[in-house]
Length: 219
Image (cartoon, rainbow, N blue to C red; front, side, top):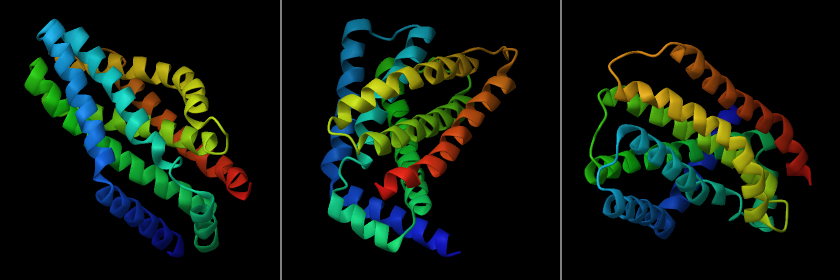
């Protein structure tokens, strides 16, 4: 019960900071809108496969800009304060939960902009929304965990990019493949197995974060 109280308090703290520092959120939205608008000017309304691939590539860079900064903005004094009031497990779970919520919101906003500027080739909107939410959730978990590791290094952004992209590429390819169901009336074989694989990967990231973060926390 005490652990849930710590987690909810830390999440509330991050929400308040994000609302106060709205320039970062607006900056990400401007980046998404500008990127999609450039694609629209150069390609018009692309084909289904191109639309799908572009969506997930944009989500990748949205995640890097919106989620990965979570640990980079925490200074040593603030981390020492958190160390005194909460445990390592509570802190990392709160970060994972907040960043997952933020990324899901950004994913929905990106989907709206995509449909407005690049058209809506989706035949199953509800299914794609669910896949997009699951994908945004998974991307946020990976980059939150990597940001926690990179925050202990001098070259945080460079280290996170080096570690992140080899890890995230298989997940992106899996998301692109799963998302194709929303563009076709035919249900592809092995869909359930791919979704379960993606969920298992997300659970593995959470487990690794809970196990490994206390060693970084003590450092």
